[in-house]
Length: 111
Image (cartoon, rainbow, N blue to C red; front, side, top):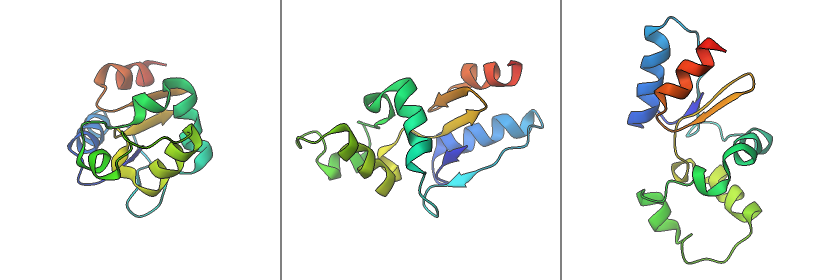
């Protein structure tokens, strides 16, 4: 699971898995950036726009809405500034979920 400790959705995901006694590997994106290849998995499945938190302060401050940039440029910004991402990013084998997604997390546990 990739997230930021201060994120309410990340804490909700941690709580969800801990209540079900599922061991998680948590990567705090403030301490260690997500690998480009790992982020590419999520981009391939959901697309860049689904991963961008367009309602967040970081998105507004980054001026991404006004910049003309390539998908690679946006991905590079996401790696530098994890607050641009909809968190948490959860991966379990081939199952991926973005944001607060209890139904997706249940599917991971069943799969």
